[in-house]
Length: 201
Image (cartoon, rainbow, N blue to C red; front, side, top):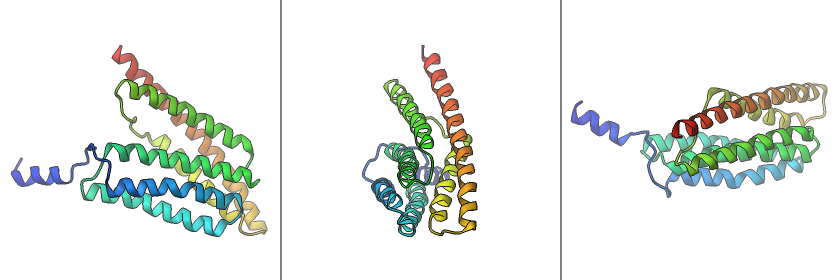
């Protein structure tokens, strides 16, 4: 490998580093701060404003990853903050939709139970010096379906038309599939985590 290639790899290394105060981490913190604002707006049926804030949050989610990779600011803290922001956004949005009477409460309970189990797994693995488990495509798909369902449910609450009612039903169906995939991913993560602990013993 040439010196130029080695320097290029070092400059744009995707390896997580022990940094805290970085621009991507600041963006992630701001995303987390925006989550209760989005939830409050949804609970009050202020859906257009909620969608605007949600769109800004989504753009910032992509932006922090681009900045982290481009300027070699991929950090261990960022790898923790990003999934926390995603989980909080899903949970708080579903809580707000439940408060607004847009979705049944059982969806909140099922999603919340899965996140509690995952939090326990992460804490146990952390005590054995393991970082976050690699993201599985099932988890990505479940998260994406839940986010699409949340956005569609917010949209459907803006209008009182037959088309909005159909969108609401489709969004609920997508949300149920998203919850199922969310739990399936949780089972996969648990199996991976238990396998790591067994290998250590």
